[in-house]
Length: 205
Image (cartoon, rainbow, N blue to C red; front, side):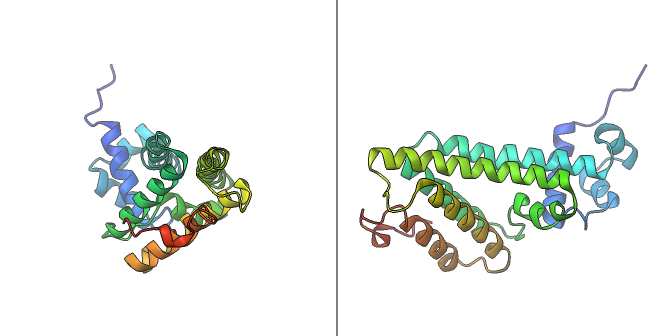
């Protein structure tokens, strides 16, 4: 009869997420994972497979708990407010990130994805999901007049995605409120051209 596991997989996975998030895939060793999760390497392998399999599960959990959850919460707001709330939270998280971990998804794009087609596919799918959230909000906002039609919704969604990636990268080396809010305000200003322009935006963060 197999012995019951003496640990909660969810807690171990949470610890692995934090380890990979701080150090990246390549820099994280099995010894690091053992130290952070508090269980033996054999138990890690039995529960999750090898380091690569554990990283994939950790990245999936980060995407679900951080990105997908944020999108779900923001979707309940009117279109323009949804986008603003999304960026407000990103700026606040970036400024409160004392370890300068950045975004695990962006880190994965720079660390593991370029050399691994499977990781690249996971990252690309998550980015498409974020862009899709922006696009849905933009189309709805342009339809009801809350968002300017100066540029196509598709172009605006691409610009917002680029601004988001830029904010997350900048925050790792220059976590300065004025810088991050400035990038955010400029990106959101395109949504308001003809509706008051950038001057109506406030440093809400």
